[in-house]
Image 1: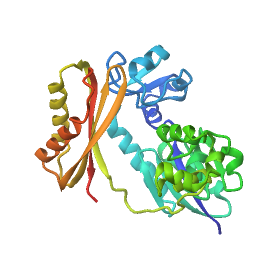
Image 2 (image 1 turned 120 degrees about the vertical axis):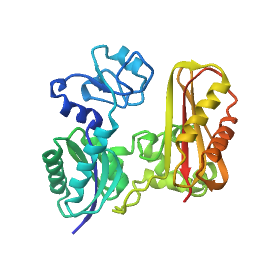
Image 3 (image 1 turned 90 degrees about the horizontal axis):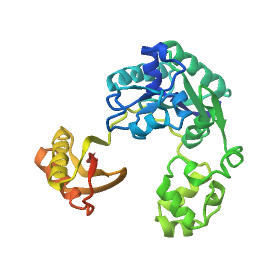
Image 4 (image 1 turned 180 degrees about the vertical axis):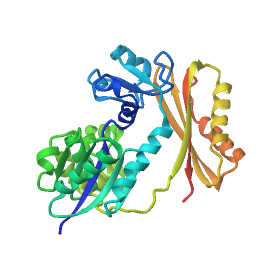
Length: 335
């Protein structure tokens, strides 16, 4: 029997859950985010496929989404409903008896052991649809990286397989940020080195990469480009490594003491049972430029005052005093 990794990714998950509650909206452009009012500040949580045809995507300001798709139906986000739907999906996957590694609301890795992984993938799709009425795409790979990327080729509601044999044929000419794990900043640094495609990165000298990105990260980037990653699917319960809260202001904060108070309030809300080792503060300036800074605690703590002091220490590292439209605070738990 051959070991495969299957990546199960629910299609337009949040929008799909809303459409189950409002079937009359099927086939219409639906945008979910904020309190559902596109005249207010907020960002898109998800958009239906129909809305995406107009260029609406997750993370976009609701006002921009309204401009791009004036006829869209805007709905408020309902985290409790999405949690409930996700719980049923993950329970359905675990009923197969395979190892299931939950990656979030709408995705999980499943350990496959079969000569016919497509059959297993179709069985998973059938089970999820039967139990939840939600569609999913299943990517198949020899490791997690390949399986994760395969879902992108299979959407919507399809099954797709990537292997070492097909890797460069599919991804060799793609930009480096097509790889799971490489973001825009790293891609720009690679581009400055003359490395613009996955295949170029795969054949770059490891010493050159290590000199630019460090002795661990540099070779790891080359591994990704060669389609190499972890293939172990762990069924251990997922444990959050951090917690965060943020708030968007309907009117920009123009006085820095107001920003400090908003950050302090968020930090107080994040105090809890788990010890925190670091606090990261996010500030989004007008019109939509975002910056982050962090600060570490000398000794892990979880009380309000320690978190507030550390958050304000991180905030003090921001030199820009332009009008602020959003602030966020993230606490990183001590290991």
